[in-house]
Length: 192
Image (tube, rainbow, N blue to C red):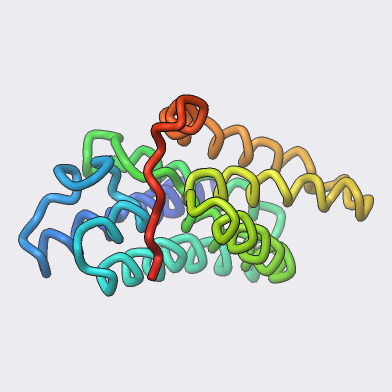
């Protein structure tokens, strides 16, 4: 029974659409009508207000940290379930007809809770790729891929399958970006 409650609560917390709520409340805009139409932090940066973009990033990270940290402390055997459900809540939020963000900030929150070094590796790779390319999407995909590669290199095989699943999900959420990258139509992202 614990797994069901943890799964549902993690999903519900993950599904809080902070990008939508913050742009609606502070900017009187529907973020789904801005930029890519996505509710995540990268598109919130395109709203014309960097503070809203950064707040979205922090809250999207936090909505994964809260349930996953609680589960890590109280039900450590269910940490991957909680992580996956929080992530799926962000990508497929009940409140917005299951049309959410791409899950990168939420994934970052998951990484920091599971192992802080994973979060540091992710951010380092993300920034490195971003400063070379200026593409948030490419940075996110490659930084996500870096985690299972790191685990294989360090012979930490017990977590590889979970992080491969997360990579596949993030690759899926970026499928339109990948098409635009291939066609050289992807727009650069300004993070500062």
